[in-house]
Image 1 (cartoon, one colour):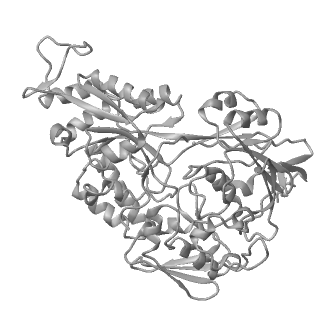
Image 2 (cartoon, rainbow, N blue to C red):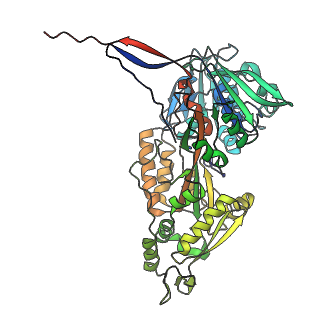
Image 3 (tube, rainbow, N blue to C red):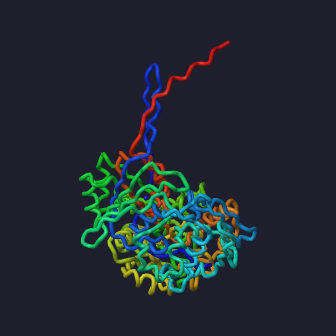
Length: 567
């Protein structure tokens, strides 16, 4: 279970606003705040198309994931800090050695067709991730192939792990599938199964109908499920309307066809922000832009020195890059674990932008300028033992990464480091540079996964330097011990302490340069009340608070409180 959950991607992505309640008073009576009541239809624009509404097959299509979040629920879900909360499972227990996880189902949970949810549904769902023909991510398949799934009775299931793995709870939030409808259907056969367009789930909304145009789904209509075991939503119906591009989605909003837009991309964000009727919610996405430095490159052995790495890091004005390239729609990282989550070290401070200190570090390490040379002149070079201080920076050959790389080059050249940019394709970046460790510096982006548990082990543990994803070749025994312990103890308090130590040590060692977290922007009409968007681990997480959304409210009047007579 060592190399799971981390992948390289490029993406864009999210912060939160709150609702205002108005309270009026008269001399003789107190007007109570507006109280939400059941009723109303929320409509939202999604960009893309429906492929299959199946929670174990929606990993590559965001519209599917968005709709599945409303139809299906899992054993548990996570709050805004990434802490697990009971869902279909009323309770669970973990053995002292963190290898046995026992779950007990909520006794009132039923499927949308009225059948009770049983342990057979748990066994069926997770056994599909073990099937040889499972078409999803290989790391998920490998993990589940090591797990023994045991049906204890109608409502209890136990998962047996071969070794302690504290992040295991993250893998149990996937929506369950109904065994009574799919028994005997393999994961491979599910790909083209009719169930994917006639889904039966356990979530707060059930499928009502599709609208087809030219044999293509253009509208998915969901209605509130009256027998939902949890909090009942106020909304009676949600319409999810599909569009080919962001511009069409925004046009539909302006025409009053939808009340929300699932994602406000760069092409429409500025106009959306100018609309007085639209509330724009933003949140960080779990993707980290960074520059991997190859600490084991024999041609650039100065990268093995933490003082030089610090100089490279503080020479870059990351906020300026965010403002210029992302128009402010990104967040400067403080450390390798997302802020706002349970594992983040709250006292940690971001590295400063200090080119003067960076230049002083280089000079103190023997990288000197020729006599009479001055910073900022194009001719100067830093030299040490007849070696010119220079770096190759590999980056994706697209607009955003090219802009970032050019700005980094400018900042490094400002402290007399020669920089050559190497634009490459995404396949080449991974296969020709990162995996063979054939680079000096690489600008890329890490997908931290759809799971709230940080588990930095695959990227920074010293066992992953040769064949794993520790592309920097960073080897620090203290950090490795802390990461080993953090993924084997189920005690979250102890894990938090270990991850705090890791984050402070990481900042001291600067094994790579953390650049940005992308922002996800979500637009929803101001008439939809009760909407909050916390930290996101996937854009679909915007529906985590859908139970509180409302369009209809009743303002009541209550008599003024009587004063208590004084003796």
